[in-house]
Length: 317
Image (cartoon, rainbow, N blue to C red; front, side, top):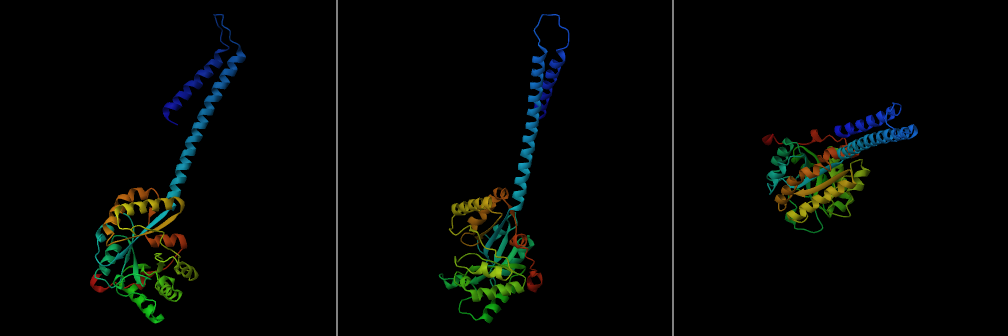
């Protein structure tokens, strides 16, 4: 309650009390003052003022409690932004790395700037994961990139390629799939991929390029976080679309405690980086920005320790 309102209340109460006292004072004019009426008036005034003060205090306390509750709820919510296709010096790379919040960069292995992008992202406090190429149901073979996992590979071939990819991306703490609509529905292959990840202390994020993905089910069976993408930011390459998708992220966070959202460098890079840069203040009102590792530790108690299992080439340390 403001000082001005408190002062007004005190004045009203003082006047009511004085009127109550004056009923016993001698009067030299013939004025009709029934004591019972004065008493009732004074009691009513005092009661009304006290009630007003109590209600005002209760309303103020209720507002404070509601605000504190909202703040606690906000602090519980987390948004993890993953940016795919790093490692080839594509459009938007530098702008993404300069974002003023913690993000996760998904770096493709065996590309010209793989180590450079991973190390730079790590220096800036971002999470790094392996963006492992996997065979899609449709798409051009050249889109896959080197070291891709294909459906016709043997178990040993899959294991060797996943291991090599992990060792080629410095500071990797997890992995997600690049394309992979065909492979992510193959239990044999994905079981091997997840086993290798777990052996190296990494978790796997299902990018959800395939509605029939077996990744969440297998991850849960293996005691790994069944974490997956919730919203693609730039599946259409326009600034207006990215902004609409960011609005969807905020709407998602109104109903859920966490949101994993994926964007890209490359064709959509400048739109994605620009939209995220301008949306950071608004998104901060909905949730805390976290790396994907923070989210999986908080939500699933993940205790993987990949630090001893990733290799940093001596020429880029």
